[in-house]
Amino acid sequence: MASPSSKAFLSLGRIYIPLLGFNKSSGKVTYATALSINSSSGNKGLPDRGGRGSLGRRPRRDAGEPRTEKMPVDQDWTAVYPAAAPFRPSSVPLPVRMGYPVKGGIPPEKKGNLELIKIPNFLHLTPAAIKKHCEALKPFCTEWPSALDTDAKCDEHFPIKVESTDYVSAGPSLRNLSARIVHLRNYDYAMYLLTVLYHESWKTEAWEAEKTVADMEEYSWEDSPSQKNVLDLLLRMKVAGEGDGEEVRQQLLGRREVQEYKDSVTRLKNEGESESGMVQYKEAVKKVFNL
Amino acid sequence: MASLMSLRRELFSLARILSGVSHLVRFLLFFLMQITVTEEPDMLFQKVVILVKGHDRAVLDSYEFFATMAAKELGITIGKVFEPPKAIERLTLLKSIHIFKKHRVQYEMRTHYRCIELYNITGCTAQVYLEYIQRNLPEGVAMEVTKTAMEKIPDHILEPLWKEIPTDDKPSQ
Image (cartoon, rainbow over all chains, first blue to last red; front, side):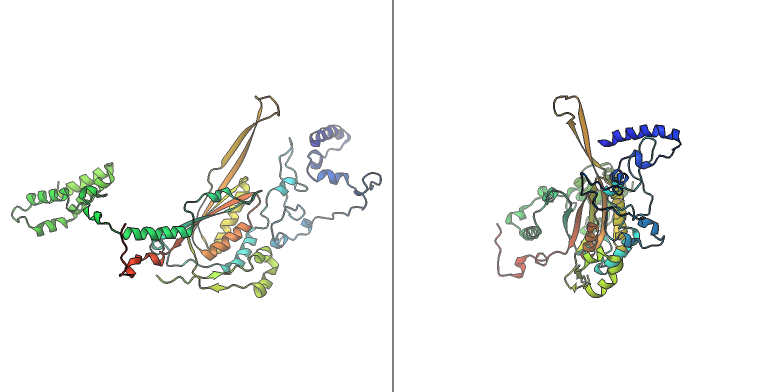
């Protein structure tokens, strides 16, 4: 690389120059960027007739003063950068510096800075520009129906949820490998499956009528030994004189404490034993028997 | 529930609008823009998740500002906007082409992520917003969009087929 060696030479040069009274050191001299070397050599003076004729055939025009000098403060920036464009240092009136500084120096200036050109800039997407774009896009948008404000309402009217994923990427290949990861192959097949499952669920076989209590997936409290025991205990406790009638049992069943007891027992049996389940059972038992 | 009076619009001159908004808008609006309204019901998206991936965190910061501002201007409800942890892929290679096994060089590739979740957005708005966002996606940034669409139960599932045809008896297997 030419730059470390040229830096060495130039720094040697700079050591002697201050003795002659030339104190100012410009940034251009000590840091090599893409364009600074060319601009310092310059072809304006003597076109090279001998060897490289094509380079010096026409005298180069002056660049003139940059556009930033003529920009008013309240200009329309969306006219300067209407679309995505690389960074133009003469069009951006900001004193931007970017790059790794030399030892004891500062990051290099924007003129001829490759780092600023390489990085994507958002100069075409200032808040003013975004507002303008959205104003133009508003007529194409529709409003969300105001009746579907909660999730519960959405689930009630639109229970089926279809998830799809799209990918945007750039690379040497057209394909995006993550697009190959699917859950279910296609939408039509999913609807077909749903239809089939729905119809199958309606069919009952003859042997399903022979289901016993031991086959049940979930514990149900009605007509279980627990219900019988509780009702018997309550009848014996309370009202010895009322007798053992169906209406008394029904009335006892309707009471709130008995319902709570039913909930706690069902929870313990279905969900297994847990700290909160046992606490709930204890409270229910205490309420039922007024302990 | 009241039927959805949803509309489908054609994005006829969207590209033109995006490229030259500032001084060409008036001409476009009068002469070229045709919004066709159809009675086809609009799709409803309960959730749209946009995940952007890039190598530079500052670029993703700017892009997130742009995307959230665009969503606010178009009236889209923004859910969470967060940054999943970056993924670093490192490889260790030999420094020299021949021998010198003890001297290696290590490279790494950092992928930064940014996730934007939008809730309750209609199909038309989603199409407009996503196209706008994707056209202004910077170089070197990739995007994944996951949409959760909501649908009604199709008509053929509301009642089992054989109930409409009482004469046919479907044999159980």
